Image (cartoon, rainbow, N blue to C red; front, side):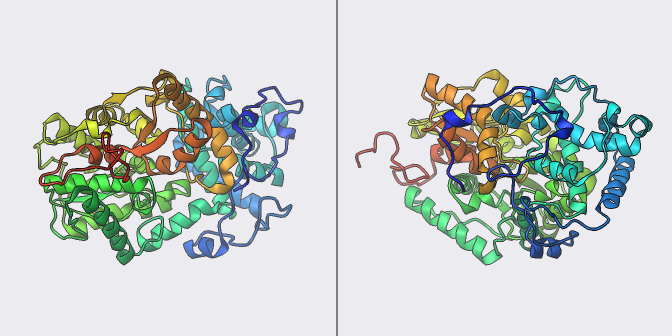
Length: 535
């Protein structure tokens, strides 16, 4: 990663109108603003077209000879297949209500990161190729021909969109610009324009069941390391079942939770919770990933990667699925899973075996969010909690884009946090809940070479965190997404130093009083609990 300038320099953002018209400005590929292309062996292995060595800074991108025809035919197919795509191409009146809602525009000042203009990159070709007015009036009707600079522009800006859907919230016509980005990326894939940070996790998940390519024995070994840590801290050795047939519940969470700090502390929280409940459940080394980077490629790959959840639930003979803290996993599950791979009639509507609560909202997918599960436990007084163990934490909560805007999932995480942490403060109202700002690294853009844009895109979220840090001494940003747990630490270090990032179930694991536990002196990170600082 290139050395980043200080925040004061990144804040020197010019929102002035460019001298040239937007069609006359060429994309500038410089370090920090684009992601590296997919590796040829990975692209070939997945069966995607035009695998080859290339770089965005090259003049020649080695496109197929007939790339214009491929794009045009792909465009035509999608207009026919997806009515929403056709509607979104036609109904925008360029009112600009979305213009200042994108975190990348706010952080960069680049007009092409206004959602309305980003979509216009695609609409201009649509008008030229598929509308009468565009064919007759050309540029006067906002149409332009497909040229190499246009396809390079698509690559630049549709991989500068995290599909967070905040712009859609403010569109008076209900245009979902994230779906426009999805269509644009599908078209780019047709001619071999993709990025490795998406394609490698897709390839890994396709081969091993998780984004990190963790083999079953390695997954079990990593789990054992965390079990050892739990025993050192609590004196309790948990014994989580793996690939257990006939369990009542299958638990699936992102593999990022078992891989690195701070996700591993959330993973430890899950293990502690399930052990204390005596839950009849199982982990799976096959369905060892909740995330689905197929969402960022095309619908076929998204469906394939999603299918393992139901396939494994059927193989193991469970009654229903419990899902961990993840972001886009829940968008895929709630918006697409039931129609892609469902209905899962062999599963039952989730019922908590501890409280008896029936979760009818999950009747379609048969899959329950762990925050719904835990909030219900707390509401029914089924957990012994000592919030003072989190007494050194003043927390706020980051609504992860996909659960917030795709599920309307706002209250359960807050309810849990308020029961396990003594002090909780909200960020400004226009930065939370459905108006939440992106972490800057969603939709497969959580890579090091893209760090400048990630931090620029993280400016709105970072500013809101800084606000509660400065006004309430908040030192912890809680979240329910594995990508957030990876992207928010560098964002906070840059825009709001002194604020840590934690998963909600890390805080639960800290606060839970376990039957037969030893006197705890540290939290799950091994840091002293309040009152034990000198020991």
